[in-house]
Image (cartoon, rainbow, N blue to C red; front, side):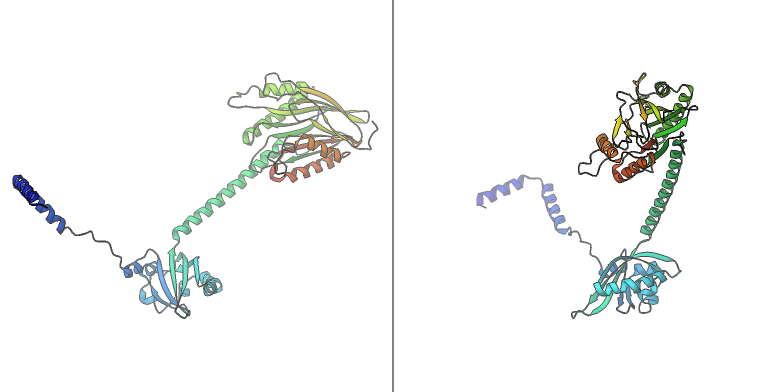
Length: 428
């Protein structure tokens, strides 16, 4: 610094108040006197003795030569009781001793280290302390084992959590089993336990449940309406669970009651539509597909008059060895409209013929192909064409095997109802 600069600085300081000079000096002194913040230092011995886990060291024969204060407090024992007096296995329960001798010790000998083994220690008052044990073998420079160092972690909270988790799981399984029993009982009430067969006609039905945890809405029935007249129906309601069960029960009993009052198939479905269409569809939609039929004996066979409300077509397996659908096109869902269109048709069953009714769970099942395509109507027709001619019971058995083959691809329940006229095929 030049002489002129020194002179200018001295002149400026001469004009500064004296109190500023004192403050600057005091600030400088305080900065020099303030010590640097002392970094916390960990005492290795205190860290060992009061660690949040237990530590112990044993000789190769298991005699305890060192144990920290944390472990001794868990055991409720003094150092003199444990060190150089007890072996590690003396701290274990009977089951723990057996596991130590047969698994833990041999594994530690082979691997030199074992981690996270669940055992139980005996405390001084006889209670059990669940712990997680990790051990490692300390070796000398020559590779000879000297000591076994073991870490002991308190597992009481974990054991309590696992017990609570197990209890919750068992309770959930019990509730699920109870729910499944209720659902199974409810499902059985929606399907007739047995079907009365008209003389000269073979009748077989089958119900395939896709999930034991849900009640589906598939239903069917066959019942007498008079001396020579029988009513039959098969249907599928919207939804699953309790609402579907309620709707299924309503549909079944309405169809039977309506058929007794007036057995005309179209009238029966219109009466069912009137009952279902009274619902509030914005909050409680109630509709279903239904195929209703009248069955009457006629000249060595049977005549079946069908009315369809949007239900899949029945499948006819001819005694001559071919299969075809019985078309009922244009039929609309029952309950969805105030006045739905109902499609009708009549088919004759002769000796050797089988008429199969089914719900769409069969044709909408996913196949095992890479694309997971739906099984579909064409595939079902081809399968039936291979089966024909086939009696009612064998037809249902074959279809049931097909349903089982879909495995997880079968997402919806499926109902089957087959009517077959026994005897040799008649010429056409």
